[in-house]
Image 1 (cartoon, rainbow, N blue to C red):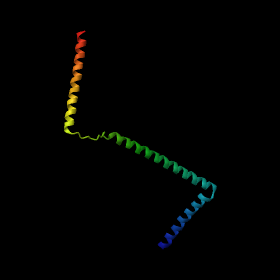
Image 2 (image 1 turned 90 degrees about the horizontal axis):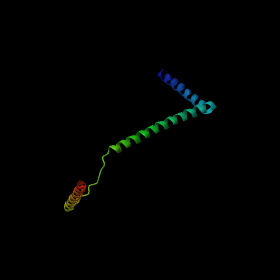
Image 3 (image 1 turned 45 degrees about the vertical axis):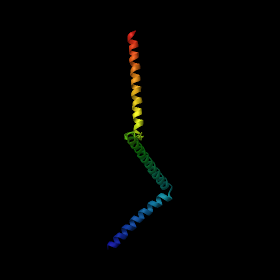
Image 4 (image 1 turned 180 degrees about the vertical axis):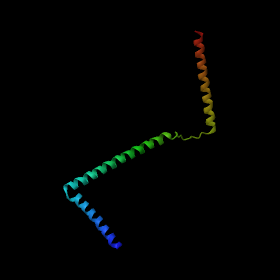
Length: 109
């Protein structure tokens, strides 16, 4: 008896599916309904994908903003570093002297 019930259920479901397919594919109104249904789903899908892309772009921007600036260290020989330090110290001393001379010159007036 169970086999007969399964067969009957399959026949009913198949008949409904066949009738729906016939309705959608053969009648003018069915074709319009199918087209509207398809267009609506395409629009929903497009909107969903636009939102996903916008969200992904926003996440990538946030990730880029959070990344620290990276620099590539350039190793210098210790003698070059010492020379650079001496030149920097001399430049700072020269600027201090000029500033002091400027203050003295203005202070005398």
